[in-house]
Length: 166
Ligand SMILES: [Zn+2]
Image (cartoon, rainbow, N blue to C red; front, side, top):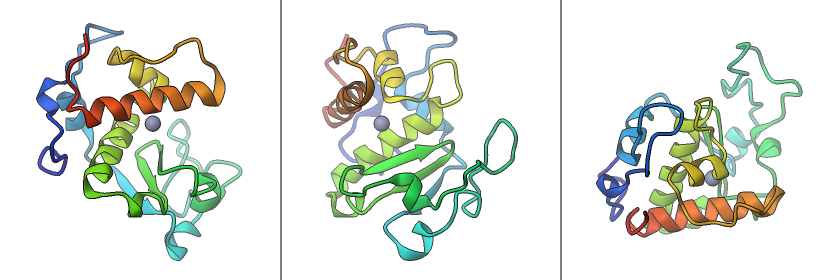
């Protein structure tokens, strides 16, 4: 993972303190990424699989989600979203495949964080992760604006080698 992350200096990323348990820095977090599955939502075959056909089930029950949409339908407009993580599955849309290698690396680390922290006391939303790593974003925003601001803060942080923040 570190080799694939290019210029991102993972060792510098340490969150400011304990939050609901042991301190987890970025490098440690990325050590929990085994078992992730990736799907090309832009591809006809994989995009047309339903969540359950792709092995994505409700982790609480082990049963398929109801409704059980296709990966493409779950993902939504591929002109708006680069990637989306659902439990341990990372869905990659068409925008991902037009990113540079460096951008793809940042996207994959970003999505890895959703997978790693989802279901933990930290929480797997963009706001959860941005807050955990004490990243600057407007915490007073709500809804889609909050998600966008927090997501952007994570990507800016990863792009800047995860440094320079207290
Ligand atoms: Zn995100």
